[in-house]
Length: 539
Image 1: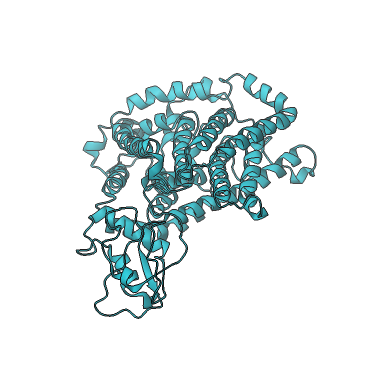
Image 2: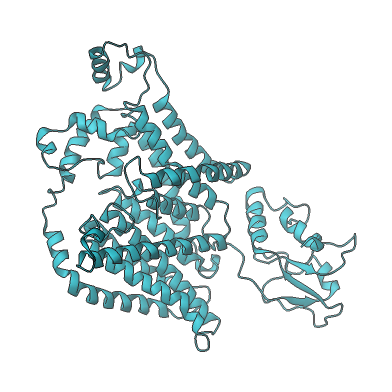
C-alpha cells in the first residue's frame, strides 16, 4: 500500500514488494497444491496464464518467428547493424515481458495466501488494509494543505491534486472508493454486533470501530472529490450505492437497519461540507474536453494495431514500444507520454492476442460464478457480518474491472493486491456456511459426552472438547452440541466443554467439504477435530 503506488517499471518500492512476494507465493502455492481437488479450477487457470508467459519468452527458430507480425521491423534492425537475428521469442521485447511477469508476483502471492486464511484472519486483513488507507489519507490531506499554501515551496507536492502514495490521482481515488466499501461493511457489522450484545447503552468502546469506519468513509469521499478524478467520482457514487445495499442486506440476528440511516446521513453531510470548497474544481474538471487527455486518440491508434497483431499479440508488457511504432505524428504532438492504453481489455488483446482473451474469459466466468454464490445465497447460510464483507469484496472486483475499461488501476501493485484479496475472499466467502461465533463454556456430565446420537444429524452443530479431563482408552469423541441446545439437568463430574480452536474448526470444515464426510473415520469427524477432541491434554 505504501510502496506499490507506481505504474511504471523500475520503481524501488515495486522491486521490494516483488521480492517479499516470492517466498509468500511459493509457500501459498505449495499449500494449494495439497488441495488440488478443491482448487483445481484456480490452479488450472494460473497454469494457463504462466504457460502464456512461457510461450511469449521461449525462443523460436527464425523460420517461425519471421512469419509473425512485426518480425519485419525486427529483421530490418538486425540487418542495419549487420547481425543475424537467429532465434527470437514471440515477444517483441522479452525484457518488458519479464518485467510484466514479475509484476504478477505480489497479487498472485496475496490471492493464493488468502485461500488458506480463516474467516477471522481475512477480516483482520481487511482491517489492516483500512489502517494503511488511513495513512494514505493522511498523506493526501497533507498534500491538500500544501497545495492550499500551508507549506513551503520545498514541501509542496509535485501534483496539483492529492495523490497519497500514488503517482496518479485516478489510482488514489480508486484506493479510496475501495476503502469506502470495506469501511462501510465493517461499520455496519460492528454496529449490529454491538446492538445484538446490548452494549450500546453501557459501553463507549462499542462505538470505537463504527466511529473510526465512519470517519474513514468521510475522509475517503472528501479526498475523492478533492482529487478531481472523474472516474473516481463516478465510481465513488456507485460505491456509495453499494454501501447502502450492504446496509440493507438481511442479518441473521434479525436486527433493525440502523446503520443504513447513518451511511446516508453522513454521506449527505459530507457532500454538503466538501462541495463548498471543491464545487468549482469539480465543474472545471467535468467541463474539460474528454479528448484533451488523449484517451480517444490512444484507443483509435491501438485498436487497428491489436487487429494487426492477431492472433498471438506482441507479448506481455510490450505496449509502449509497439504503440510508439504505430503512433501518428499528430498524436505525438499532444505532449503526453503514452505508457498505457487506458483500457486494460484492449491492452491485453494487443499484447496477448486471442489466448490472452481466452484466459481472461475463464477468469471472468469464475468471478461471475463466485459472485453469484455470494449474492444469491440466502441469509440463513451466513454467519453474522460475513455477508457484508463478502458482498463488499464482490463489489470491489466489479468496480475495479469497470474502472479498468477507462484507466489502468490494476497496474499498481497496491490496487492489484486489493483486487487479489477480494478475489481470494470470493473463493471462500467470509461467513458462508461457517461456524458461529465463539460460544461460552458449557458444563455437562460424562454420560452426555460419550453420547454420539444427540444432534448428530444437524450439519451446523459445533464440536467441543473436554478441558482438563483424564481421557480413558475407550473414550469416544464428544457430542457435537448445537448452539443453544438444552443440556442435561444434572452436572455430575463437573467436566467443562469449551469450543474447539476456531482455526482448527475452519481447517476441519474445509477438509470435510473437500474430501467428504467420512474423512475422519466412520464417525465422520475430520482429522483435525479428532486430534483436538481425543487428545485434549496436548492443548
